[in-house]
Length: 467
Image (cartoon, rainbow, N blue to C red):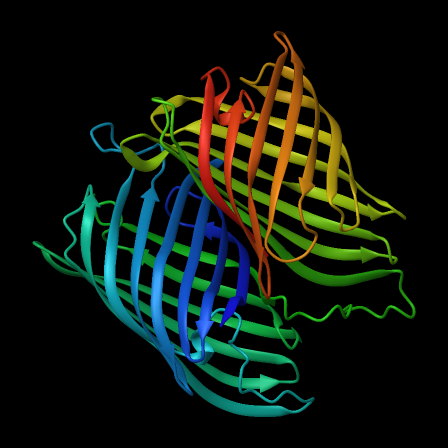
């Protein structure tokens, strides 16, 4: 039996024409939680953020559970998915700001359609080769626990033709058809993409693409929207990528060495009548190595908070910005900027945002004790009445390796018109796997999370995965 294997991630950014938006960022991770020979227990997450230019929409798809069997050329699985679309604040007043559903279904996909495996089976050299390599996927699911829609069945089809290869570049065309059946009949949402998939290493590829997408029945209003997109995507297998740089390290001190780090979790707020559940995920894309000890990274984060009796996002927070990490002898130093946007989907008139400039220090080696400290300033804010922040944390691991109990204390102090002190005490267990780790925890918080300032204390029961 293997734990946390075949972890794959992707991040895509595109300019968008059509609809009410002009840009999108898509983040996705897929992994096998357990494997016993060819049987697997699978989980996945896909999130799309649309901008106009501020964040306007958060769409996410969660594969709560996938159980299946892997064969020589593909995988068959039974799955339980949850899909939630939280549309623009420009919707008509009589419409709610969400549409969601759950699916129970069966699906099959070839190995080459799986995230992180698109180049499997292709032999790369410096020449030209006509591939005409076909990969496909298909799934059929029944819809239940729906909101703001009457969907009953969903059929999803996808096919990709890797047409030809020139050196490390594969030129492809992909077509998806998502069909929805309800009491009005069948509607079809087509998607077509043409792209150039560039192999950077065995488990890393960069994609340049253009696409057309039509949502005929997304919100159950009108005729839908047409999106034309052009952008770049990075896809990789986490834990399998090699540490090679993709520039010439013998001549250049600046080297391109892309890598994705993921930290995401889900928690139930058990003793607070205002909120129900909290979830978040951060994708940190390492872009450049500056010498041997400096790394330039693009950090992205999205978090949501729900009401006690409604799993739809009630509050949403986005962060995006660059950071520079410097590895010292015994410490890691990080300088970063973050643009944050916080808004409530039920309170469309209030949007809070701020820019943060900060410095952070932490210990850089495995130890029973772990700590970090940081200081930052907010040079510009909107509906956020603070100008500075001091924060820190101290944690203790009972064991350095394997499954270990731990405890962690975190605190911050926000300076502003009315200063605020918040803290969190967290305890639980850490489980380490082949490509990452899992934490199960209970956390007691007071004014620690920006979502919940002024809402009293909360106790959270949750889990967090790191890859």
